[in-house]
Length: 294
Image (cartoon, rainbow, N blue to C red):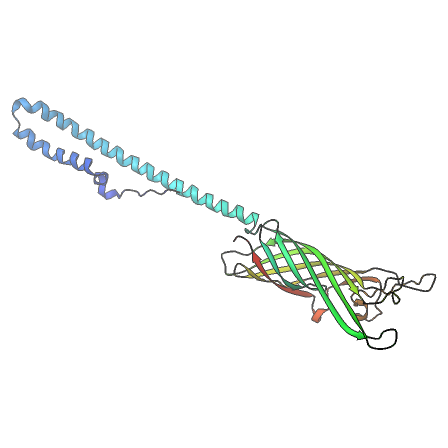
């Protein structure tokens, strides 16, 4: 954007420099030269007198030209400012410059998974991520002889992808700013009971659960790289299997993650819908650190 400095009006022709000073000096000197000149030289003096109006006309034309250029500069400045405003508006529609950034951290999801996660910005407003968690417990158990000589390890792990869209993004020039997004996350929980082959049955007794979460999330950035991530939302719990006994009187004992007993019935296959019952509130939380170009 170019800006021009408009000549100060009261300087008049002096603002144009030495040519104007020379013309003015010549104009002031013409009368005395005309009086002192011989009669034969009057023709030359007359020519100088004729040149004076022409010099003044040139000076006025230069002043008008500068005024027009100054006006053009103002117009260019106005157009430049409008262009910058339009560019800022377009950038706002495209989202904050987050494409290509990667975040890593820990979280508790709305279905109760404590996990490590990775999240990547495919675009300025769209992320894909993956979360995974594991828990184990080992204790001594009786062997075939009834002695406590065997170690038994039980536990569970869960893994699942997520996708989020971030329609509201805070100003990146602020030290503390927040983004708001909504997404979907699918988690598969699988347990292991540490049973021997003799103890295993043909029914589905191993804990298996599929949770579909629809969380709304806030990314509260503290600086450009650290974020605190509360979320809240809706969970669908699918526990595979059938409670109906087969021909041998056996039924699936898959307890899932134990949602049945938490809500007052026996653990087993079924379908659950919830807004969460963790600490009496339907929410999860996480922290993250972000890499990538700022």
